[in-house]
Image (cartoon, rainbow, N blue to C red; front, top):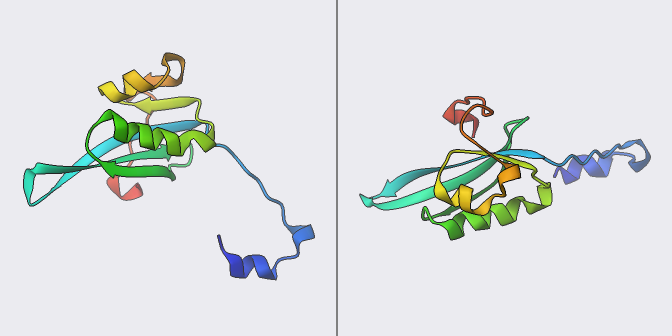
Amino acid sequence: MNYQLLALLNPDEVEVVIRLADEAEVDEMWSFIGRKQDQRWLWHAIDHRSGRVLAYVFGRRQDDVFLKLKELLEPFGITTYYTDYWGAYTRHIEADEHAPGTSGIPRRSSGSI
């Protein structure tokens, strides 16, 4: 938040718009430190419409790490999750909220994350 700008604005002239991100693209990617056996995973969720990062967590490729990400997404009111078919997603996202596969996900360059 830009507090310096807020201090300059007249509150009566400011319109605040709060929009929930109702659709999220969720994925995970890995890298390693030293050896490939020492994998570290970045789990991230981006707004399906804007491409902006909503939340991310680092950890292993395990259900409990995905559940931490899902908890961070709760305030956004996500109604549709676009994911791949990895097990954590199918186990922890309700079927009517889950859109596995790539048909709904626009391809983005890695620089957009």
